Length: 394
Ligand SMILES: *Cc1c(COP(=O)(O)O)cnc(C)c1O
Image (cartoon, rainbow, N blue to C red; front, side, top):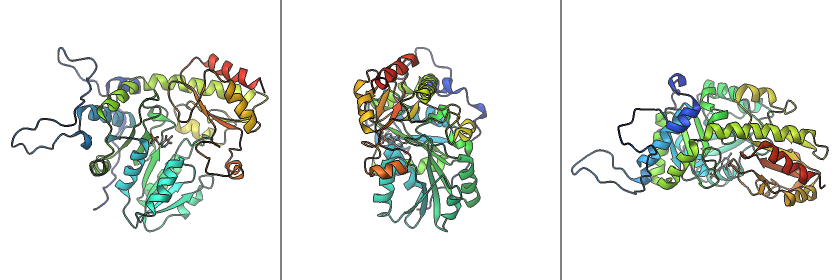
């Protein structure tokens, strides 16, 4: 099986604004008596024309109309030729890579990635004959140094979890273009409102739609966007491996997506408000937010992102202080995951980074006592007041 050609994304010039796309996709004149909200097509299969040779409609194939509506809308948001939704962010990550890499190929991955993705690379890819090397993005020369004759892909995540580092996408994209290697970007933490990686030279975008795209913490889903040929290959794999998105979940996701742009405005405001407040609080040791001038990637973030998002890392005195604060919070709920309308807080030492020792975590800039805050869309004053009353008990 030959890997698909990558091709360039079409220019986004003719795209309506991102709020309009979030609501309508590409607006069209509707026939009289059309429902304003497209009904969910909750059907696994469809009546075929007798003797017809057209492609069969079947929900596992990803061609159910509810799935297709959603995919077209997302492709337009990313400025991609095409897109496809899958049953989770991990399914999107796995199939996007398998669409590009073959046994014998080599992948360069950033060291700063989601734990599940790293496990996928370490536990599964070696078994499939795909070699993975990890680059330290703090040393940009490593990208080129790790290149092999067999390198077919570079994978990065930006912004990163939980210290919100923002990678220099332009630099990696330039290397990828020069060497004919596919650049795959997981931009879950930004959403297409804050960052559209294809506009900066990426070939494929992955998102955990569980997070900002859906935004209501009630659906697990993922998506891949890119050239028509890459998406076609992901769809081929979807049909074989089978992680299709259920139509009802696709319909809910489409409903969530309608408010994406306006939700992001509030997530962005709340992230900045909480970060500034935390930065001035005497019991906070450090704040990680790319919108703050002291963040190591502030200059890159200002250049690359339209805004800085709702995720904030807050360093407290230690695990006891963190637990004391978490017990007192009322608006923020102590739960993993992120990017929903409700504010959440979690401790990387017990969730994403629990496989590391305390010393290793400290080495990665997240000593115990670090809390990861996902600012929802509540009133900013209430978020600050909640955190403030909890911290003042220390
Ligand atoms: C949550 C997440 C994933 C995995 O998504 P699921 O929908 O939980 O499978 C992948 N990448 C990032 C950056 C995430 O935050």
